[in-house]
Image (cartoon, rainbow, N blue to C red; front, side):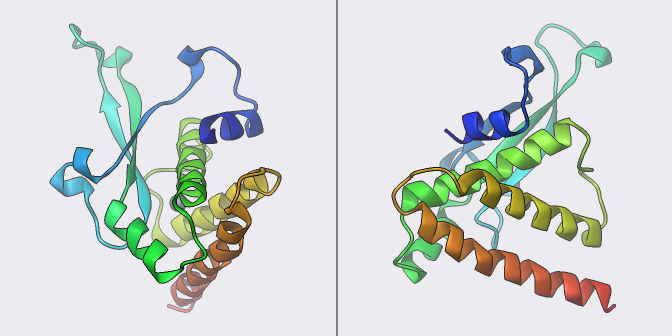
Length: 163
Ligand SMILES: [Zn+2]
């Protein structure tokens, strides 16, 4: 569902070959290094290589959308108005927007902190725009709650700009 929404929004042409390659993983499929404390989800970029070749020109970007179960379940326990499905829809939509923006070079994976925070805000705003017309039970509560995530970004950004 998140993929349809994001690909439609960015008008990605049909045909899988032109789409970024990604997978969505929960904690049991993450490596030790991919499990972090804090964020509910994150995206990690890897360099993929087709089997049976060492040709660098055939390398491609592969993205892992990591869902951090422990943090998500914690958020649900703290805020009983949130339900699992709409929260996961929000998170996967958000991370897929990052993936599409990386793959279209609208976002740089190694940007400095301030630029990353500005990008993060933009991605939250796009997520909210995309999901605002979607009819899923509990999603409106998540959209209201996401203002809290946006506000915490604003304070981080203020701190960054005042340094
Ligand atoms: Zn993000």
